[in-house]
Length: 370
Image 1 (cartoon, rainbow, N blue to C red):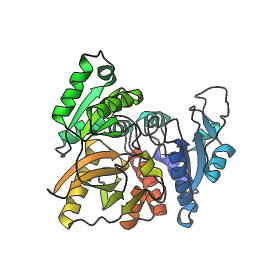
Image 2 (image 1 turned 45 degrees about the vertical axis):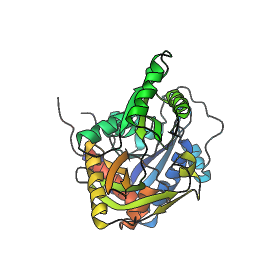
Image 3 (image 1 turned 90 degrees about the horizontal axis):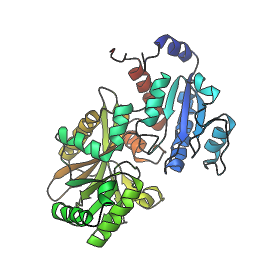
């Protein structure tokens, strides 16, 4: 039965230390962010309250997709710097022998090939527990179009949007202007053009004119075959963290403030460009509604373990609009997700411990038989 490991083997390991396969790096543009997250998690696993429970087995995925174990991953964790030269091994998918020693995986991979269901499918076939959502939850949480369809089905309010594909954008000169006409009529300006399957604001553009719209659509199509265009809205950007499996819990709500035009990649990862306010200064009723919507979103995409859910709060009208769910958000000590839980009473080392236990709990539930 795929995805089911006899609990006896895990219980035996728990008598000593559970071996945690810390999987980081990856092929996406968020390779360096993954290293930073992995360093923070490794530090939490080495904290006094976790050191006697867990043993870290680091695995580093190079930018070409090759897996490394042993000294090299540890060197990357220690330095915080990605490998500049790639180490060759005989075959691309020849995994290190140490993978067989892992009791539970902690895949701290962001973006495509990391949080989109691909690595989750591989880990499921390995029949070993892993932290986070499964294939379905990860894939839906990564694809903004599928995500929004799930939110709509759950009755969650959202901004207006239009979906496109690359073939429409890169079609003949007669079709493309009509697409732009449709976007202008449906959404107006400003609006946001986004590749459907990239994280951390990569490839996203805020557009205010026809010329900017055409350029942004062409750029987004170079990143992904599926594209979404969303209406702009004047609102506060607030976020809520979710922790759990079938009975998830929501954290306090935090707010992001920044001086840039929008929360782009540079703003997100440049120190001092954005401020996190936790808890956000919101009416209690608004806070509770955001928390409730975060839990609904978590269930709607079949997420597990953890997720951060982002919202727009239109203060002028009192509207709360869901923006997106991130099933494996940034996980450094200064990232929003762990900070939200720290302010909710769960410090970083305890949070990492709980996530591992949630992975074991979910894996212990047998998958349905055919």
